[in-house]
Length: 245
Image (cartoon, rainbow, N blue to C red):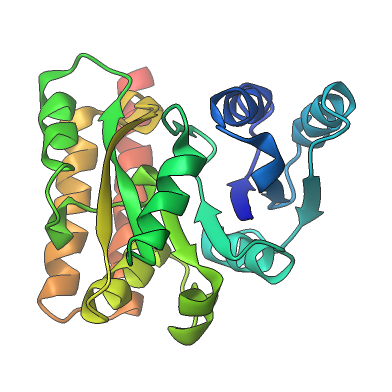
């Protein structure tokens, strides 16, 4: 069984669509369970999940609340998962047709961890280029939006998501998997929303990602990266406020 773990926070406008997608695109819905881990949403996320559960009563679906923070939420989901394979999926990422079959196939072929290639739901030329590069196995081409499958055995062996860090949780796990010598990119395309790029600005957000990547590569600690993140958020908010005045 594959346990699909989805961390959410105020996703009332998208979670029902994603859950429907997961059912419709699965090759065998009986081989999956879906675990939605909510970080104390203040909208109707829970109501949308409940409505979906009523529409699909035979589906194995769990809804739990955990401490806010994607790493904490995903790890909490792993602790209640029944599947031999864990599949961590962001709430705005949509895996390809027969995604479950491809994940099971990858594991059976000796690839206990990896992701899909990724395309943004955008025609912005830079985002198209970013997506194109996800076909390669380079560490620099990875990111949480591509989703992350990993056997439960390997997840526990490497210590799972670090719940103590406030940022960089996806990259932290991915880097440990690369250091372990275990990572596979399934040659099928997942689609993900470009909403953060649209909200913040494509080049501005990409520069932020590039900066934290190089900071980490050059030895910066998580605390130093988080400090940079907080300053960046403050500056971005000030610039946003100025542009609205």
